[in-house]
Image (cartoon, rainbow, N blue to C red; front, side):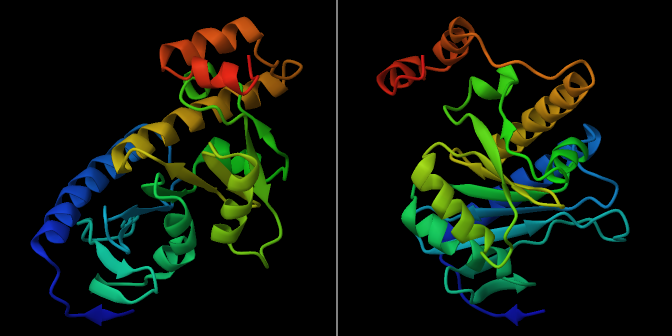
Length: 235
């Protein structure tokens, strides 16, 4: 546990304050929708625009007497600049943030259905329309070899899948990647959890089926991704 006194600039302070409000809303919605397990494991990291700094938010969990969200601000070298807590998750994803400025946020979450798939060590094909329309990524890969850090695994996966939205923590939860801020990332987590549930139910009925190309065209057409999908030969 680290406590650090460091004068943050006004712009950074304002960003952290706004991000904390978003994190409080995200934690509430994730709990209310049953997207987190009873233990409530959810850890967001949000990069500060234009800085080699990020702010981390941990869900206090069901046993906490004080459920106030407490931000921890740290630089990409792992030095805590403000708040009480560890900068481990910031440091773990620092190279992802450095190499991919389009990535704004990462969340580590233990949710019932994504967690169930993480137990299987199987690559998860994205077959839920509400998720697929948001991304050109088509699957979630399991991170099995834990001698490789999660950040390094994500960096490698991004070389194969530049639109990567998530990886499974084998036998654990999922790390989900956001490109439009913390709240949009939280919304994506809810949809991913829905999709994981639907596809798990489909397993009992013979298995989920790949999209018809016409359906992919419809889904990506709704979010402006169809032209890029055609350019890549995805439809």
